[in-house]
Length: 137
Image (cartoon, rainbow, N blue to C red; front, side):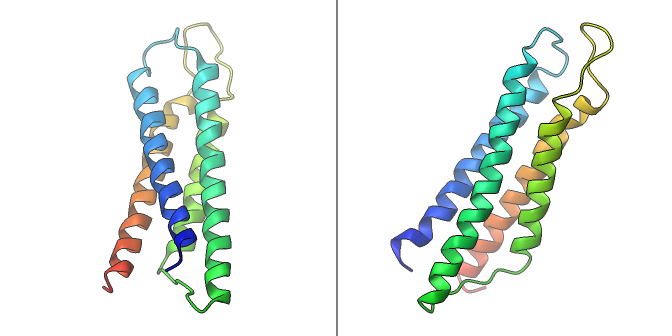
């Protein structure tokens, strides 16, 4: 495989690590009402953009490889990618809610860590599918 075929998996690993960091911060600061929500909002938005960029990059690299006769097809890779983007978008959107009283979390914000964790698990699943295909299984 050409060198640029490895850009997408490298970005996927970076996105996964960044998603773990976002989920870790979200879970550890869950009860801390004084935590600056704008930082978590920005992290979630960056995570969503990384997920979208990763999907677009994977699609473009696959199109280029297809033109050279190296097309790569993974089972359930595209549907999982769409699910990751939907979960990352939902995680980003729930950070925009406003609490009724200071020091109170919005009910939807309590879903944020779980949305990110599930999306990271799906990214790990896509990586596992890619590794299985790389080893010919």
